[in-house]
Image 1 (spheres, rainbow, N blue to C red):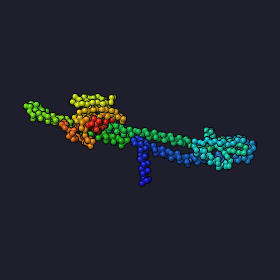
Image 2: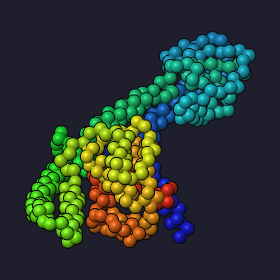
Image 3: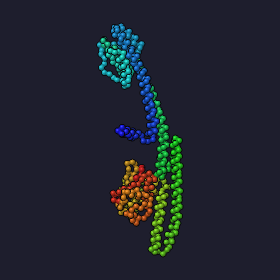
Image 4: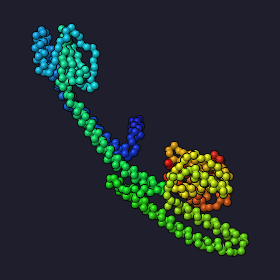
Length: 448
């Protein structure tokens, strides 16, 4: 149990560090194995080849230095030193005696520690017990070795290729170049496939908002094209269903209005009486109900989206409500605009304002920009409000809730349902909350 908990913690940590997008994950799947393979190949090259070759070269150079030191110690005369120097030149080795000198005390390590380690090990084996010092960084193309002798210091200068395998970096550069090339190709191919999925997601989002991406066409991998074709077919079926439903309801509405018109005409010609006035009121209510049914089912499917000024939208809704006898105040953030279907969003806001005015004496409309880039429009009233547990039920079609908000209420309970349906078709949503005025607060949130 104690072991599984840290493992789960590490697993959660790794999941948080991994990219969440398809683009990032696909790139990781392609690039990570290439990088690991290149690292493994590089390590194997240096471990099995480069260090072995470098060790043998260092041993060869250390052997030549040891020969020169031993020969000098056998006969330290100037003439013998000249002979040693002449023979050492054949081995690409420069020899010079610095009389009465001592070995340097400061060392300058190489960038690759393996270089110094290999040469130090070879010199220690061949020169023991003679003290020595070497520097592989002072000269770009040479190595300096100094050996302490009784008369001073023997200084050796040798080409770098005599001590190390100097071509190893070329192999590393080729590997790095190949990795960059393969990664670039992978990025180009992955980006092309991910772009096809992103285009399909944008087209689906636009369709959900009532817009249509006419330029969207299936492309990319076979599976992506298949998914895009399925989306287009689904979009056509949904649009055909919406059109058929709208046509059917328009026909039903027309058929129902014809007998209603005849009844209203007959009542207008009849002698006024309490019964005829009651029948006229019933006919008016039936006409209003038919209008609400049609608005709920039809929506604003055929309306084109455009840039909409939120301030103008709220002022129009407030003005219409004020003319109907409501008391509506505004608290609007200036300069807010959003892409939407003007008629549909106006109907949604009007439904919320009418609902608030029907249940309260004071209504307030406010707006503000969201940090996410969208906007928020709130409609508040000072009415009795509703219980928090009934918020979800309030959006159900034909829901009338409790009697406290339905006394003498005209309609069939479709106002909030229509408003939420319109806002959701724009990619947003409506939520209910307790108002600062004491009643109900309906909040429209729309994406930018």
